[in-house]
Length: 171
Image (spheres, one colour):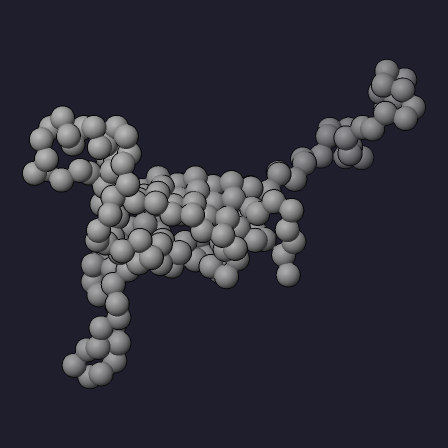
């Protein structure tokens, strides 16, 4: 131990050392600050709750299946929930319609041109936020800013980019 001090100088910082074997103690990993998820498949909008025959509300099957698939993909690609205020950027890619010619379709997909029309962007966002609860963040109340786009792409899918908001503190 004295040799270490002489090599680096008396004021040099040394990593913490275990008293038993003089090996450096494991350092805590840096907290995860950015998560990027790619979920292939046609993006699905969150459906409105329906009323069953008994009058109880239920979630449409298509919404449940899409939300479960997205949650599974997030669990597979993420290490755990992020803490603090979060910024979420979402990209929803759709294949160009088949009724367009091949060149027109390829041009739209290469340019990632915006896609107007259904499904509504806000309902696409709702499905992602609900699917990510407890996986990418503890609660979607942590989200302080959302950016979202619908565009044409070579492959249909959803991109979720989550980062800790800079210069802010959790309350």
